[in-house]
Length: 170
Image: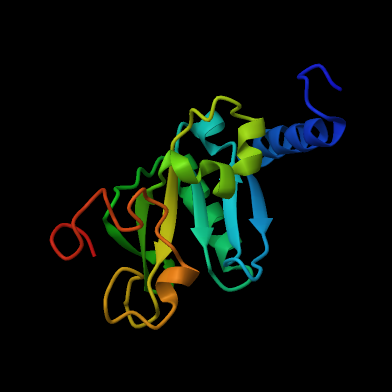
């Protein structure tokens, strides 16, 4: 056991997360997909370093999630503040991206190791949701089959909650 009361391997991970956040502004953690769900990528340390919500991207092709969450942190670090429900088309060659608040009920699954830096779980988190290249969102009835399962919306309801789709958001 260590000073923080964590097993050695958890303390090593906590120290790595802390060091990455200090050196780069955030650590980026990637979790591979499996038979139970899509892979995802999330940040750790952006809240601590810059006062911006940690970010997660779910179900994107290999490498794209890392690019997206790191671009989000870089832009936030430069002073940009993002609006939930607003469509951003400048992350990926005009492919729409929207941000939604993540329900704390999803923190253990999608931000598990972030809890080593924030043991109380007291940090904000957003999901960066990416539309299909044709502009379909996971919650839309015309979205490709399985899209909503591959890129679930991490709110309590599983649908956008910070805005009304089609009214004041995509």
